[in-house]
Amino acid sequence: MCGRYAATANPGELVEEFEVEQDRTAEPARSVMTRPQTPPPGTPDYNMAPTKQAPVVLSRVPRSSSEGAKQDNKERYAEGAPPVRQLRLLTWGLVPSWAKDTKVGMRMINARAESVLEKASFAKAAATRRCLVPAAGWYEWQKSPTVKDTKGKPRKQPFFTHRADGHPIAMAGLYEFWRDKSVKDNDDPDAWLTTFTIITTEAEPGLDRIHDRQPLILEPEDWATWLDPTMQDLDEVKRILSFHQPGRFEAYPISTAVNATGNNGAHLLDPVPESELEGVVDPMTGEVIGGEPPEEVSPEETEQGRNPQ
Image (tube, rainbow, N blue to C red; front, top):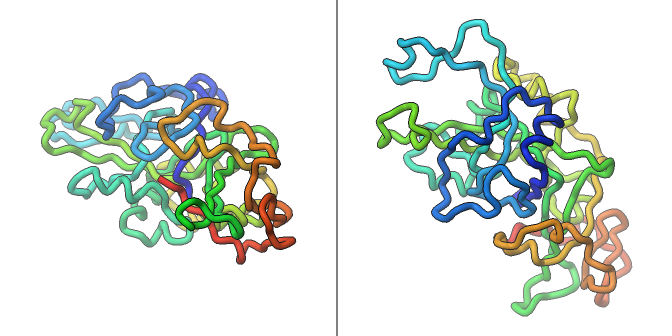
């Protein structure tokens, strides 16, 4: 799964990196949070968590400005206009258009690549509303095969995974618009909640010693196809969903400070010295570091970690 990640870039950097045509992050957008988001939406966030607003790249065909579209209160599109690549702030946790309320979003922060086209909650978005979620990397928690915590459960060690070449990652995602029928004005920002989910796939060798799932990370050559809302060839969507290219990532253990969503800042990415590790499995070698471990632990022997939210 992917339940936490580092979104360290500012909108200007993302506009350049993802060749965005419209930066709409300054526009008002409805949030589900009851307290002000910290750090504020659209600023670097080293501990991005569900329900927060995050920068997301998507492509949309421009809306029609005709009077008919305004009068019937429905979204219409300018005929023949090409999609425009945008950067928007979306809420993490997908809320389908048919949902009765927004609470379902907390249960839909991830979608499995293997079944996304078959699941009613995701299929429509997978066909026409695909997006990219920019990040510096993601967090995952590994359960120790040898060391217990104070409650007698396997100790959880957080890891940060990032691209070995230093480039930002582009996580494949889906987005949806949810209409609040209690708000009469269609143009009122509070009338619409725009949400997203991150697609996950089977973890590649090495990373599977941390967790059995990882985000689906797309390469630049597939970005335009994935984002294009007019591309509705499900065979092509399946091709991208099955993308697998091991060896692109590095992972290292970090401080448990990341466990608390209230903690933030670049220090969360600092590696933990090996001398401070207890029963941690090296993702690349399978060696257990710290404690009284066996010589090597396979991915099957390592209990896969879960996000401790």
